[in-house]
Length: 215
Image (cartoon, rainbow, N blue to C red; front, side, top):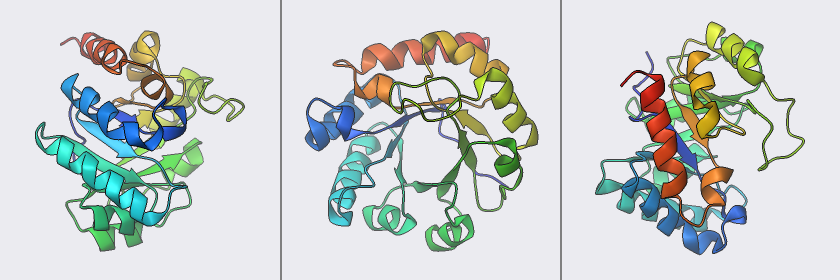
């Protein structure tokens, strides 16, 4: 049985390459995101040396504690373990069974998928959620696709045994369509990373999520 997602189910994923201050600014962005209501951040800096990833993740965990927020690591489960993170997000080829064995029953484990056939193979005993994308054309990874669209997202939701978070071009105006397609939340990266004021991106996203759910 999959573990519950952090609430609200808005996942912010880091990308220092889109930050004006680079890796040094990740902590500040995380702090601003938490203050704006975000309760889930994943460190996605897989091209950094392991020790630097661990240091960054530990800083995020420290900042998250004051807000009761969750920190995961995109990449390797052992890095998440060393950093004391709350879980790991695996690529589509990742070994979720090994990650679960290493991190234990309480860790939050996710995996990326790009098609319904992949989603149908996800084992809810090991994986708590999947990220599906790109759902819309995205400035973060131009040419990465093709975009699933709302119909493609709904197809993935239809076969998945775990909650689905769409990523790729997700903006305030598209949140309702994502949730209407059955998504349990949304994941964002570039829109937050490129903004000089992350709260101006996060707050409207959270508001749209509440409206779409009738809250």
